[in-house]
Length: 126
Image 1 (cartoon, rainbow, N blue to C red):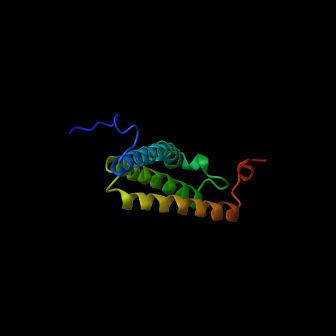
Image 2 (cartoon, rainbow, N blue to C red):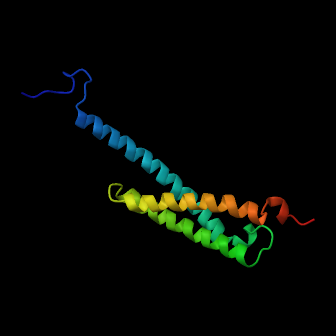
Image 3 (cartoon, one colour):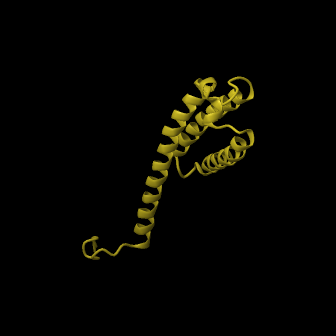
């Protein structure tokens, strides 16, 4: 006997609900990965190639190096996002590294910027 979904009046099997949740999860993951790729390329290009112009305060030495290295790391995140995009089921470890690196950046910037006193007003000539 061939039973169709129309005869069940909207009741889905647990397997169908799990498949729908998986599709929704993959769509959300890909939306976040797309944002990571777009923002990573934007930040990576600007930081890697325009580090001297971005540097607040002294435009030479450690500030420029930190910004350039951070720009290169953004390209690494873009590569990681592409790897996870291609095979989300096998990209768990890469995704965990991406989350760790983004969290580490947030923590570093939260400490580094106030500690050194980098603000837009410090880079403006008087």
